[in-house]
Length: 334
Image (cartoon, rainbow, N blue to C red; front, side, top):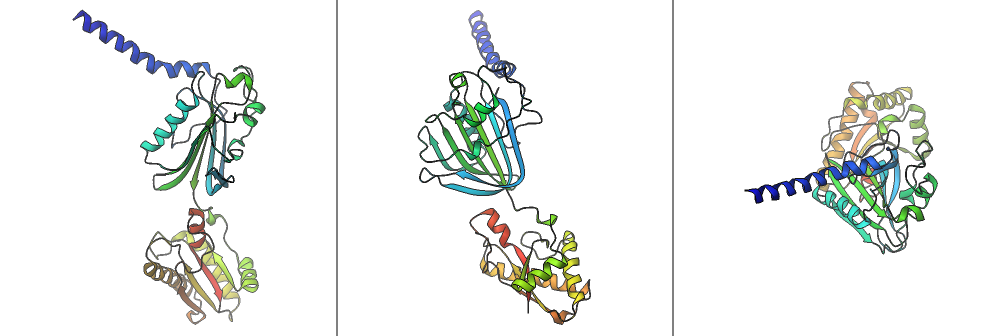
């Protein structure tokens, strides 16, 4: 029994040391950057210092992919970029592998990775972070915002992972690169990690309604104008209430010029069966025509509805942003 108690006590001490170690490491690191916090998708490596954070509501970034010619995957959406320093004594391998394992458990699909020999991959964009002058400069030996953020990467020490993961129905692009900082004082004690997460989505087009003046200009110059302020649920043709602002502007134009005749043309992306998309795009266009004729009393003889599915794309259907551009309704002069 005494032997069992001794073994149990030792195991308990080991368990406590494992649990308490991150707390001790956290206590030794400076406070996080003001108002900075981990992304909801993935937490930091335990005990790390969140040095800086940059969040853009909508932007385009290039995710390094492939060792040849500095290739990148361009992604649009909400961009969160986080810069961490891991606790002293942790290796780039240990830190990076913890991130990768967490993503794999979440069902992430790896699209690219490298370790130590990353070829022509350009990580320059990933380290474009604001140096926060309010951060304490003397709490880590060798720490200054400029050298850490501009020269964090010691060549040949990088470990990189890029992939996608579905979270709450949204597609997220994730890039993680860990390396030794390029400053002499820091490189022997700490490793740095940058986490970039892009929640791929179309720009919030309901913030900009194509008004009468823009409609007139577009029709006169091009004979057609694309509208992104008309909303439908996925796979359905019932127009949503938030489309009213755009319908108001379309009706105002048609009411101001009784001779104007237009086609209302529905477009989809290439997801799903073509025949179904042809029917859906035509049904959506017809819904718009019906709304203009009934709610706004526009003569239905001046309107026609057509649907062309994915036959006339404006963007690349291989990307989320491109598909978002292709899902639209157009006003076309007859």
